[in-house]
Image (cartoon, rainbow, N blue to C red; front, side, top):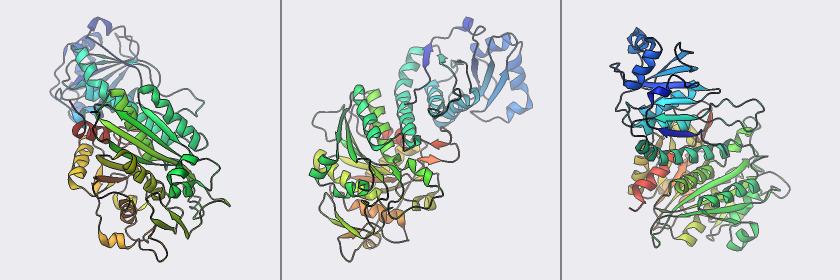
Length: 491
């Protein structure tokens, strides 16, 4: 997987500034006050920093904007990056400043961040780490990412301690992006299961259930989705047991369709290549579990992902087939391209039967309808429990990950009635994302608080976001990690 840029921490050493050969970043607020680090750079460059902040253009800069001075006289640096940022900046203002530095530097070279004036330098560091990502594993050209980063601050040990759990989130998000960006001929179902199994080295307990085990459990709907592919189907269970021994876990369930042709209900050829990202929900689960292990979260969480490939073949499911779920309900499969819900419903039922979770969240790139409703700005949030839902929405807002609650109701559920089975897997052309959620709710026990996140619009995007380049975003890793930290961790 992509490795975070090495970031080290040291107490401020102004004597080292002149000799640094990469980039040097200084932070200056709107009033133009120079801390000792900025004053040292200004003196070395014969007043260049003061000239920048006295220029008319500086007054028009916003927090997070960067002015770069290439090959400054008097220093060995490739460039000095002057960052406009208030000393008390936190949250997205500080994170965007870090992201701007990651975008600005590019290419080779180490970076020295003189963070002494900042009260929340860890937020800048987190923004830098999140944006400093490029999926280049299949490119033969030299990497576009830069070298290591050294953060200087008067209280470097405290900054390092504060940054550590945030960097764990960044690493989890990078894993999520890697998995979602990976082409399906590389990230096969078996390769995916193997990658998740490797996280045992972090302290996770990982179990891989193969097709024989799934058949014995009665996961017939999940198996029906993958039966047209030569690639075997799996369910991978990842457990992090950092909380009280007798505390019920939070269950995270992810859709892991490594490639979705639509099956016999074949998708149009245009844009089908994007369906390598149809395992985005499971990638978020994997990223969250990695984050929890890296930061040693004091919570019990179980992550379950159903890994399949949906292909057309002589053995594929046909539109009109009836399949029996693990729960025992019969489902008329009227559209084999509505396969994600068939994967999720069995895994969700298994999660409840096996682990008796305190609450459950499922994630899936489930419907194009949610993009029609919310575009690429927000994930669709569906829930049977307002308190639980509000906890998540609060966490998502704190992490600036767009999320919007959508309705559920009996009228939508009625659209799933089937003439020949207990339900259909589609509800018709109207309210597609809602009827998909209603389908899943049928597999949620009455006493289980539940959230369904339809992330089809936010998992992978065509334009860069504040903290991610074009492609997979890692949306949800930060929000779910915060939900767990705020709601489920014990002191």
